[in-house]
Length: 420
Image (cartoon, rainbow, N blue to C red; front, side, top):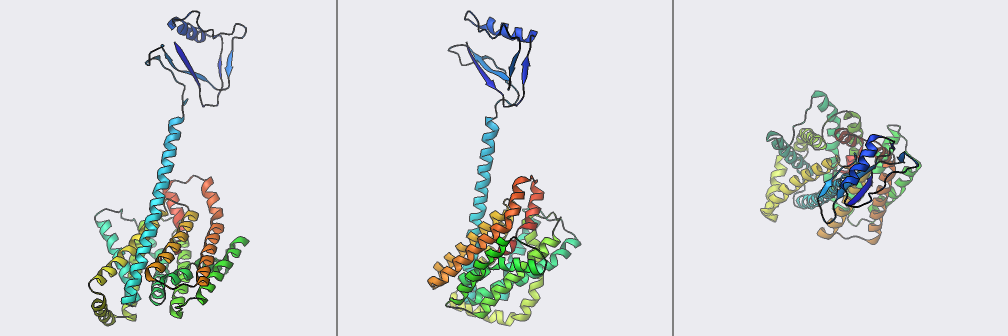
């Protein structure tokens, strides 16, 4: 007969004294054994058995037999299975985040390519911006009506606090589209990588917030890299440059209004962006009609169709659909990751857009121009890391339930870089 003993993971102490239980246990083992003499488990000189962790009999088997005679286990003696499940759960979570990032980057690259194609053939950025918001709003209304997505529970106070956010979002969206219509995609994204500098400066001088010295030092490569890229840009255009700068400033204001107004609002990231798109569409439409107008749109549409062909309609539809999809995915990812992880992912997204646009549109780039872009993007990464270091330590030391964590990320993440 074979014996196997295990120690429990419980950090307790078990004392077995001179009791009937101790004698019965030994006699039971001896009576079942075919060997003689039986195992001597008693200490004649000491009647107490004291161990730091409780022993338990895992199984008693007969020789040449696999079936146990009897089996007894201590409470929580074997923890191998829960640990294995936890490892699998962590791996599944990382895979999910990886899918989010890959989808986010891919959709963003596709949007920027089709958006630039449309603007090259149809230079009406106000209408293009309106169509992007209209398409996303229609998609979400259908999703709510068919119950594919949960309808958000909102009230008048919600829309009231969302209004200034939507105004800033509308300005930033249109300004970025105007920039894309005048300069290369890569140049717009290089200038927009300087947004963290706007964020820190506005927060410091308008809101009175203070940051560690390392954050201010990280602004040096951002500003210097953007300046170097702008000076050496071969196809520099002041309207395009100012559009990107205004977009940066507007998105910073949007973040400030969002963080102040949305605290305590239990709206998911996906529904929050959907409501933001609906309100921005209502704000933008009359201005788009006033600035460009149906006559200019009709004339430009006929010209684009004659030059490009029916595929131009697909370009317009694609840029509108992919704009909404990549923004939805980016907001959904906020429920799964920390602000620092999101910032790192956003920096990598901007690099993928710049590189892919240069390859697809054959944008001429000088080495000094590429160096400026690299410095600016590196500075963006450093600034985000320093700014979010405090939050990351808090996030790792606290346990927050999923709903609260989602809202906390929605308030704290600088989602200004989600757009474009």
